[in-house]
Image (tube, rainbow, N blue to C red):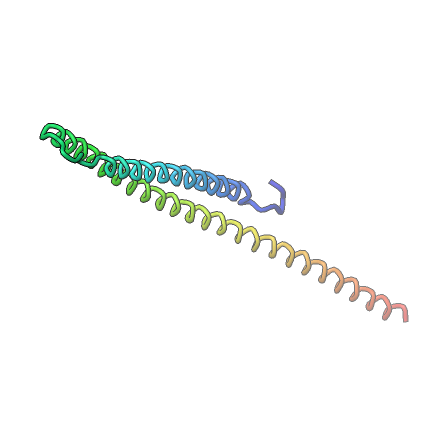
Length: 144
């Protein structure tokens, strides 16, 4: 590391990597949630499509009801999976927010560090100018 460099540079890079990973996790979770909601809609369409036929025999009626019951069970499971996927998306968004806050905290430390270095360099330069001015004034008095 450089003599006057920012010592938390590696930490900042790690925080950025964590944030990137959290972003990717959000994208994956949203994709899974979209798929889960698609499954819910598909089951709803299946259920709506399984109407009891007019003039059905008792066996056809019973078979249709059994099929509708099975689809309703699958719909219930799909709704549960979609709900879980939505919760996962929220958790990943929370993780992303935490990672962004941690990264920003390190960036603020770096900004303060850089500002302090600039102020210190300006103060050193101002002191050097003052020293030169004082020395020049002293030399002029000595020459008179």
